[in-house]
Image (cartoon, rainbow, N blue to C red; front, side, top):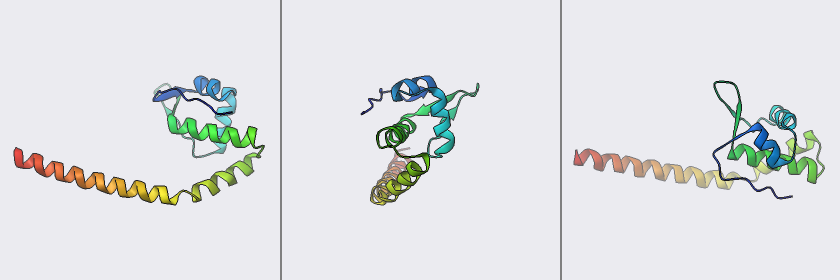
Length: 114
C-alpha cells in the first residue's frame, strides 16, 4: 500500500484524506494523538498539511492499518524509528554549518564589491 504524494507544497485535509484513503476526521484524530503532525493554519483556521506531515501520516497509516499496531504501539514504534536516525541529523547539522559558512563568505564578497 505505497502512497503516491502529489508534487505540491500544501494539502488541505480533504486532499490528505483522499491520498491516505481515510476520512478527514481520522486525520484530525491522528493529529491529536501524534504530536509530530503539525499542520499550519490559515487565517480562516483551515489546516494546511506540508509534505513532511503527509509523509508522517502515511507512516502512521501503514503502522496502524498494514502492520496492525495500536495507537500506543505506533507511538512507541515511531519513537524507536526516531532514535535510529541520529546519524542523518548529524549529517544535516554538518550541511547546515557548511551552508552558513558559505553564506558568510558570500556576504563578505558582496561587502567587498560594494
